[in-house]
Length: 444
Image (cartoon, rainbow, N blue to C red; front, side):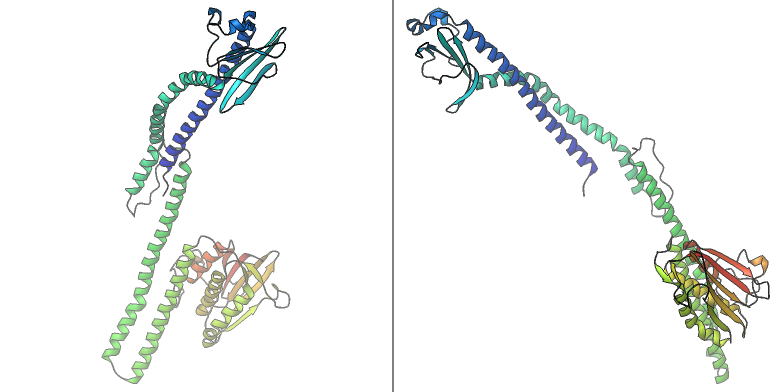
């Protein structure tokens, strides 16, 4: 795992080192240019100021004092006469080939020389100097500047360590604060005024995550509490019926009791299915996008619930002529599983609350780029005072027969909201019954 502190320190220290190296190289090159200019000037000056007497071979081989300072083994002095004869050579043992007039750079063996040639009326003067002399001077000049830079490098590193540690202190404080939190502490993280601007978006994202997590946990707690409350009643009744079966005998009584027990079990199963559907819809903030044939979904659900409708003698039908061409597909955008749950809950709810021999109609209609789903029954409807509350979880209308769980409409409304669709409950005006209208399903 990479540490931000280590990366910052490594980057800054390596950067300082590279900058020091580049600065040293630049200083050395600058000093070398100055040394070259200085020594070129000296070579030219010496060549011009050489006395004419140097051309006398006798003087050339003498130790006359007038050559004092010129006979440096690091400066090669050569003089040729008009005939091209070498008349002076100092120091002995070092010979440089004659070059053209002006400055030249040559290489003799493993040594490099800087050579200056001067053509005079009666002679040609050539001075050569090994380049290491210039490098020595350049290094000496550069070291005067480099040593102070190298001396303060440890101070710069120490300053970098201090600045990085100080800059990361709010981050370390935030880390310790989060580590000290318990698993139940989901309150927002307080923003320290010293917190770096770069870290503030992270804190904001964490706070948003904590809010979502808190909402999720709250929903789960409510779900568990509601599930325990709603399951307690049918399971308690089932337990009492089992105890009664142990105390009584007789096929007639046993048959009646078994039917009641089956009803209790079916109700518990239905309640568990509704609770699971509610939990699934609560955990998903928005519907997953996909192409769903809502006509095919409605037909499939009607087929699944037709047995329940037949048991009560209810006429259950689907009308989608206004939504498709010739009864074909009616594609909408949404999540197929959620839309199936929505249609199932609406039709199941209508069948449960419609009296035997009644009628339930499922209508699909296309309105521009949107599809409308409507489920109409001729049951008792919903009292006006209860219309505003029947979408609450586990709420049953005052005229309810107690067959439902109080979750069907709440789940359907939540699914519609996730699909950004409208959800409306209306009592029928032509007779008793309820109209449930889902508008705004986007056609795909």
